[in-house]
Length: 272
Image 1 (cartoon, rainbow, N blue to C red):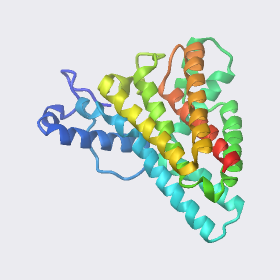
Image 2: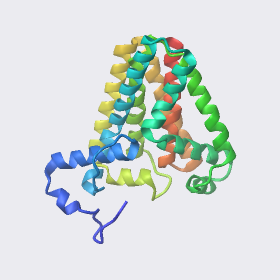
Image 3: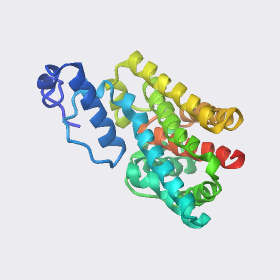
Image 4: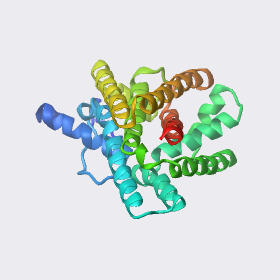
């Protein structure tokens, strides 16, 4: 992130003259360049562009869901075995996102496993070194994900695509709404740059759209319970973050996303 001498981001004055369409396009590009490895045109990070970047965060989930559903359809059509199906389905989200959320998951696992006071946990989150607990639980997480994904039947698609959208809408909403553990960092940067109420309403619309999609494609029982699982994890995430860290950080938002994803896919695997 680069700052101008007068508190503006690079070329913000020029971007301000581009109108609402230009600003929204910048927000879209910022969201995809930050939260995915999907190639998009380069853009300067400006305050105007940051205002609505989180509004487009769930669209990364749309892309992941689309690729995953396409893969699942082809795998079932050509009779892939459960192991091959599960392995590819497990790594697809990581490849598309570049592992940014898994990085947060691993950092939080290290911090929580330390059983240290809040201040020390926040220091561990900033530590670039990877601890033993992160490696251990990272392996456990991927094995559980493999087991769950390999059990998803044909009936689980395209409903599973809604999982990747709902978790990002909730994660983004937490960034602009939950108390922050520190005054610097990625979560704080996006929260300060976001256009408050507008982003909250936009993300809430994404939540409702994802829930509707889950129920419409997965059925009232499976879709509703999957959305319910997301709500349970979301409530736990808020309580845990405030109690153990004094608020959320970018790492905690990524940690929630990964836990929520595994939880929702588990419900779908059991029911469909």
